Every structure is written in C-alpha cells, then in structure tokens.
Amino acid sequence: MLPILRGLRLLFVQTRADFVWYFWRDGEMIFWSLAFPVFFLFVFSFALGSGSTRQTSTFLVPGLIGAQVFSSGFWGVGAMLSTFREKKVLRRIYLTPLPAWVFFAALVLYRMTLLAAQAALLATIGALCFHVRVIGNPLEIAAILALGAATFVSLGAVIGAVVRSTESANNVASVLTVPLAFVSDAYIPIDRFPGKVPDLLRLLPSTEFVDAFRGIAMDGQSLAHYAGWIGLLALWAVAGTAVTARYFRWV
Amino acid sequence: MNDSAISVRRLVKAYGDLRAVDDISFEVAPGTIFGLLGRNGAGKTTTLETCIGLTKPTSGSVRVDGLDPTRRPDFEQLRRRVGVQLQATSLPEKALVREILSIFFEYYGLAPHVAELAARVGLEEKLDRFVGKLSGGEQQRLALALALLHDPAILFLDEPTAGMDAFGRRILWGEIDRLREAGKTVVLTTHYIEEAERLCDEVCIVQAGRIVARDTPAALVAAYGGAATIAFSARGFTADEALAADPTLAPLGRWAKVSEHWSLAVAGEPGAALGAIVAYANARGVSIDKLDLRRPDLEDAFIAITGESLADETVGDGSGAAA
Image (cartoon, rainbow over all chains, first blue to last red; front, side, top):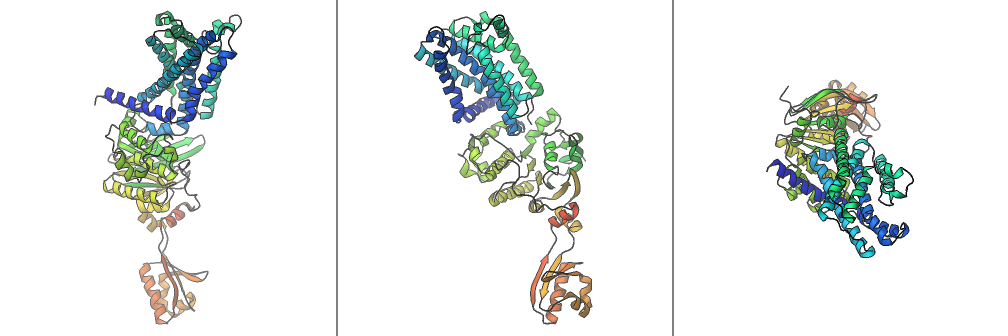
C-alpha cells in the first residue's frame, strides 16, 4: 500500500478508536462534554441576560461552543497527553511503528468530531428553546471551527509537552480554560470591562477565535472579513505545533 | 563483534548522583535467551529500556541488530524488529482486548490474526473484555501478545511474569521455548531465580548497576554454588564414630551436625558419597532415618556472588502491572 494511503487508513482507525475509547464509552466524558454545556446555556441565558433571553442565548451559543474549543485543546489534549505519559500509554505507542503525525492528527480529528457534535447540540437546543438562529454559511462555520480546534489543540499540546506531571497539567489546563472563558467574549461580553481592557482582551487568540466564530455563525459574516484574525490564529497554531514538536517527550 | 544481536558497551545511566547503571557491558549472540537477574533497583530495567530507546544513556553505547536506539532513523527501524513487553504496560482501559490486538496489527501493517494471537497467550475467552477489567496477570499476557504480534527477531521482556499466576507463567515459559526453537534472541529481566535457571541460556547477575557475574546458569552454579550436601541421620550414628571406624569416609567431605541430622558438604561426586554412606550403614545394620541429597542451585550461586538473597523480594512487585 502507498505510504500515504496506509497513513490515512491508520488515521481513520486511530481516530475511531480514540472516539470510542475516550468518549463513547466514558460516561463522565459524555456528561462533561454534552450535558454540562447545555446546562450552562440554560443557566446563563436566564442569569446573565440584560436584554431578552433570545439575545443572550444568541450570544451564548457561539460563546459556549467557543469555550468548548479551548477547553477541548487544554483539557482534552493537553492534560490527556500528560496523563497518557504518566500512565505509560505513550511509551507503548512510541514502540510501535505508528507514525507520530497519525497519533496527533487522530487526537485532533477525534476532538473535531466531538466539537461538531457539541456545536450541533448547542445550536439545536438554542434554536428550540431560545429561538437562536444560525445564519452563517455551514462550510465557513465548519472551517472556522476546524481552525479554532487546530489552534487550541496545538496550544494544548504544548501543555502536554512541557508540563511533566498529570497533576500540574490538570492545574494549568483549569487555570487557562476557566478564566479564558470569562475574558474571551465567550460567557460574558468583553464590552462590559472598563476602559482599554476590551482592547487588550482582543489580543488573546481565544477572543479572536470566539468573535470570528460568532460573527461568521450568527451574523453571517464571511471568513474573509476575519482574515487578519484567522491569520493570527493560524500563526498560533503553527507556533504551538513547533513548540510541541520541539519539546514533546513520549517517555 | 558485529555479529552480536545486542551489544552494550560501558553503559552508564546516572540520575543526579545515583548511577542506576554503572558501567555495564555485554554482548548477546543471536538465538540466545539472555537473562538479567538481580534485585529490584539493580539496574536491569534501566539497561533494558536503554536497549529499546526509551532511556538515553548518560555514556556508553548500545547496538541492537546493529542499530543505535538513540538515533531517530535507527530507532524507527528498530521498533519493527524488536518486540517489547514492558513492566508496566498501560493500555486504554475502555478498549476491548480484541480492539487492542487488532489496532496493534494495524500499527505494524499486518493482517490481523486476533483470535490466533489471543489463544497463544490464553486470552481467547477475554477478547470482549475491557482492558481495564483484566487481572494483573491477564494484562501481562496481553502485553506479551503485543510483543509477539509482529514476529520480531529480538524480544525484550521486562519482568515478564511479575503479577502472573501459575497459568500465566506456564504460557510465558512455553512461548520462550517456542522462541528458542525459532532462533529468536530474547533479553529478559527477572528477580525470580527459577525463571532465570529454567529459561535462560546465559545469565548476567546485576547488582547495584554493575554486572557481577555472567555465564550459563549451570556454569554459575558450578563455579559459585558450593558443594552438594547430603543430609543423613540414622539411629546411633555420629560422624565422629563413623570416621574413626571407617577411614574411607574421610575424603567424602566435611561433616557437621545440623539440629537432628548430620550434614555432609560433599567434596567430590555426590553419587559416590551417597553410595559410601549407604554402604557404611548397611554394613553395620544401622537403619537410615533420613537421607537427602541437595545439589546447589542458582540461588546458592546468587547468594555467594552478591552476598544478598533474592528470597526476601516481595512477589508481584512489577510496579503498577497488577493495578
């Protein structure tokens, strides 16, 4: 078989395995990645709204999906890699001829699949319960989501690469995920922060991603409209990948 | 010696001030079952992990099948040629045994013979069980299956029977015999004397990061095991009287009283000594209460060489393997 075909076949097999082993058969994982964001949508729609719940939910649906994107990178991939290393799962894989790129690409694809499911669920519930309407071009929505996932998975992988212990990796992941969700225009509008603070917060890749995603999905903006931010996100993705490639240890 | 399957030269691995491996050298000829025998913490696992590229040596060199595991391109070739059973192999808990075997066949680009491989390690009944629900011994057998899966020429088995029950040990021992017949090279670490003596063509005794003896088990026993001993007791028998009465008993060895019986440390051939003692007893009509011959084994040699015993090692301490 051609190496590239063999690689693609392995990628498919590994992605499916990751999805089944780490998501489908893990009740806790299903709860945190599906039920929990929906719960947030309900609570925040009522609690954080200043205008109508519909307006609030229209803000929240892409925000919650966006927060899932970075939590997926930091927790799902970063902390997971550290756990895999500590539990000696990584070294067993390292000793097989599975190409490293397949291993990582499968993690990204598994996460993207899960994100697609999360996004679809939140959008559906938003539509049914709060009359939220997604008007963007589905292909462009998928593209910006995929770019976000690639960016935050590669930044998350940096945690897995440089943080040695599982415990510290979990701490770093929480310290990044939770505050970022609040200061990146995801849970609450950053315009509510005083003075120049919103301008500073817009320098965060998480803010750029959430705003671009929201604009494309909810306001029907085009990808081109966010070309600058998309370029920056891609740069972050490349930087994360480079740092991971440099410092990642299997053992 | 380029024809060695494995060549380790002046290997040192230091963690801070601790030299886990302190100047170890050995060569393993192709087709040899080679054992690293020693207590926990002696440096066996570190040596083995250096051979397969999991640990970088502080100094010294390692070649496996002519390849240098510290060089990336060599390592990539190496992992197709060697099979490894790690001491603590952890696999995804929510994966089925069947899925693990089949995906590892995929990794090697091989047609999956899942049922056949499972049967080989006695897991044919457990194919649809979650890896996380296997016992420690079953997980070890699964790890063994992963080492055998691609029919490698060289195998590294780290404490392969730690946490295994009698059934698992029998399976492993049977596999080693098959590998020997197939001409494979096997390096295994163990702290079980019986395993080293029964399985290995050659044994290195490792103590505090150094090799303190190396030979076939039989040669180690012959060189270091000491004398065979005969335990003997008979009504009214004392060695002093016997030696006085029959001078031919004197060259057999040294007698000593051990609780209720006499013990003879045999100087020559144990069979001749046994014959002489029985003849002495028969000639005098003394009835024999006890007559046991104990030949020295690898454990005696181990104790003589290291000044330590392996017996006080706890069983099944392949850290985490049984978790």
